[in-house]
Amino acid sequence: MIDPAIEGDATRVSTDYAQLCETVQIGSRILIDNGGLECEVTEVADNGVKVEVKNNYILGEKRPMHLPGAHLTLDSLN
Image 1 (cartoon, rainbow, N blue to C red):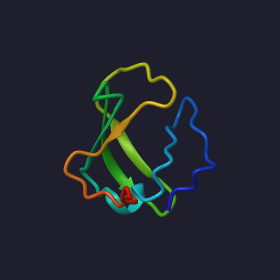
Image 2: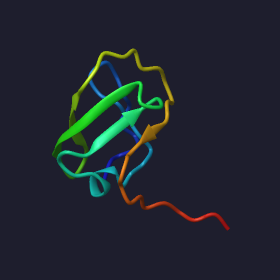
Image 3: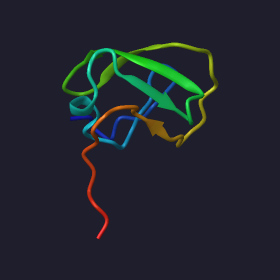
Image 4: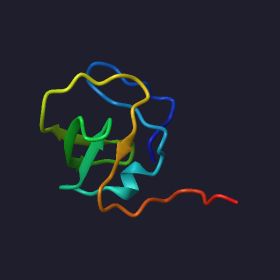
């Protein structure tokens, strides 16, 4: 499970989706900021994932993350 207290920096992106490690697998795509930054998962660990970045993109703070084809574990709306 990802530790939400880990902050992003110039070498990593943080997320508040704690189940990311359980949701993605090697080869999964991660699209950040509506696909502006395209990544492919190369390694999955208990506390994070490593990706290969597929393009150049300047990433701002608090950008949306999309996991095409993934089955997400989210709380339902009541």
